[in-house]
Length: 125
Image (cartoon, rainbow, N blue to C red):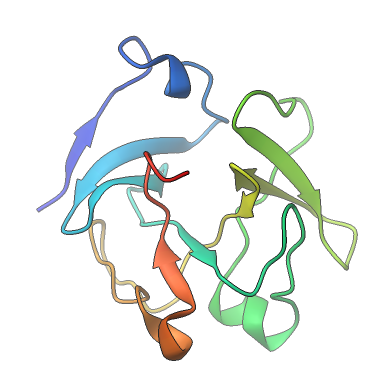
């Protein structure tokens, strides 16, 4: 069950989330999710503010697109991908969705690729 939490007014960390990124409860804890409530993930093979998930990888793990008009700030940065598109990153970790999550609250991508993919926890450092 997914219980959406609005932390915009409560937590200074999330007072200025990028558009369409929220915090919700999943089986892993307070997790970053998109506007549809779909879990967001981080990839251990990415380096600080650089995505290495391109091509077929990005087809399975679609990057969270950073549209123009909302600047990076605080814990939020914007990564320029190999194809020139912009992707949101949280605390230096580019964010992705997992194509096989079927409904809000699913975390089926957590631990895949020998443990290299993880849900993006809202309180992760």
